[in-house]
Amino acid sequence: MKRSVLTGLRIPFALAAALCSGALATASERAHVHGHGTLQFVIENSTVDIAFSSPAGNLLGFEHQAHTPEETRIVDEVQAWLSTTPLIDTPDERCTLRTSEPDMGSRTEHDHHGHNHDDEEHRDIHVSQSLECPDLSNATALKTPLLRQYPGLQELDVMWVTPSGQSGATLTNEEQAINLAP
Image (cartoon, rainbow, N blue to C red):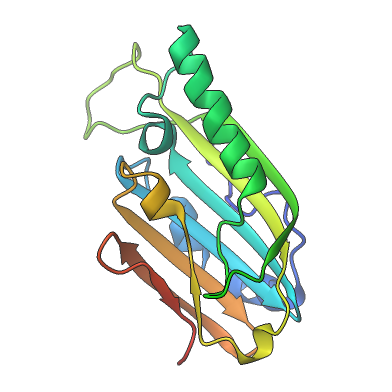
């Protein structure tokens, strides 16, 4: 069973309409792909609701449950960072975190191109956040610290809904800005 990356978010009417059209749903259909993650957000006035999803290996360096003290420390550090860091922000860093709910270990189905690997664990990390960002009505770009913080995350598929419409982009280490201008 696939888990929607938008689970747990307040879903404004504009996002519900976009989801019905299938514009954002395709990101949640993307398979568990190492090196890739998805970031979806909705801007409504000064509130930004965010959903982030990535294979655990991109952030932790492993996907199994933590077995050693070192692995436990890594999980705790990543969870603390995801709990306290806005996953998107304005260029002048004016967004404040209202809520953050990281899920550090949802098991996922993983297709190895027809190969069955029952002994392998595949886990995804999901994060739901709500931010308060003043003066978003004039914002033309946003940024995310995810690619800089986690080098195992090589591509980030970003989709958004704003009062002026919806769009998307793929960010990489070379291109980390989210250009909101049409």
